[in-house]
Length: 123
Length: 164
Image (cartoon, rainbow over all chains, first blue to last red; front, side, top):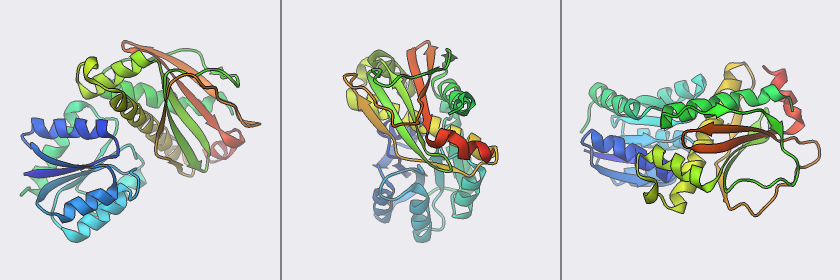
């Protein structure tokens, strides 16, 4: 399975890619803003998308809506410091399958990814 | 700016270090930063807007910044380059601001928004304070070294306080 990791922090992308790798997901592409994430996703073939919220050019919430309009089934997890309940609800309503709030313990992100893939399915 | 406005940021720093770095951060006494004081080597800044306008900053000596970012990545400190260290500090201040923002929101205030982070590297500069703004600083010490949190709000944070 190929995963798309979108976060404007290269450090956070490395952390997330490390977590994916420990789950055996070694094929990953990176995007440093929402616009690049949408363009990359249009290239196709992703079985999982991890999206930050606060990113330049296009934020993660807008990217989520665009990606979801292209693909109703791909598992999408928001991984963000936006911790307000309203934001979580907004993202889930817009089609996010899970929501991970930063800061997170290293093992938590892996569990959330596994849980999401088990629930939503992967391709 | 009242001292208690800094409390959500302090709590957020402690939580971020404990959760992501498995590190206990011990805080020192809050103090007012004097105009013209020199900052530490690596400073991550984020602007706050909306109901309250201000800035939050995390400031590290080089060595502490390197240790913190290396721990964040789970890699040896020798492998982290300057760009990675700055990026890691930016992400940390983003997480701290996000946590504090959520606290203000839970307390019933109108949501504040956070900007994208900026990092200043080097200590050969001073910061001038616009009239009426006060910077509060809280020093921290942890197993990875010392660092400090600085916060300021425009209008003395009055809007935030009224909405809590």
